[in-house]
Image (cartoon, rainbow, N blue to C red):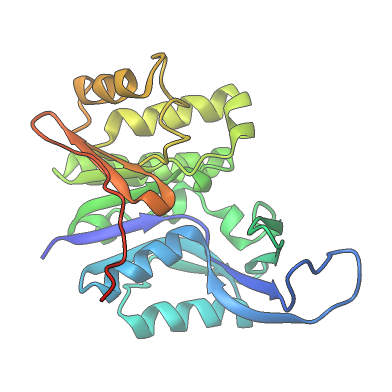
Length: 251
């Protein structure tokens, strides 16, 4: 079975008890819950029966233990998680609005996961990795970029494949080095998974169809465009599967 690895932030999520609850006034909060986009992704992989692991850093605290124990219990290989004794595990406080929008307060860049660097990437651990998944949200610091580049390079050199969910914060595109890092990952990508609104962000084309065609021409083997409640569309050099509106049958 193909072994899948990912890399990036591990943190806890603490959620407001009520919709519309403000960060500026006292209130009840629920949590901590294990979180972090790459950690959530890899936990779903193991629940689908995949062999998988994650490379990250947590603090020597209860929040770090919570995440490691959850991932380990679900079957994720946690040998790539480094516990940093003098750092704290990342966190995200989240509150929901009545329209479904969310507000966050993150502690990521200055937390343990923000210290992840190339030196934390164990080449031996990735020798049996046949597929590597990267999320653009993890490219939030230059040493994190170096870690991602090292891990991706090892997997590709061993004949593995790479998937990329850009999950881009638009302000990242205003930093030339971060934009360069996103394009670097894109050049290594076999499966590209942007949302409908992200298709054009790393493309010089003028339409969505032109952008997808260019991605495929440049070497990406498969493009999956996520369309929220409308599902997803699939594109390859040989096949296109458009999204279909789902409806509930009655009677």
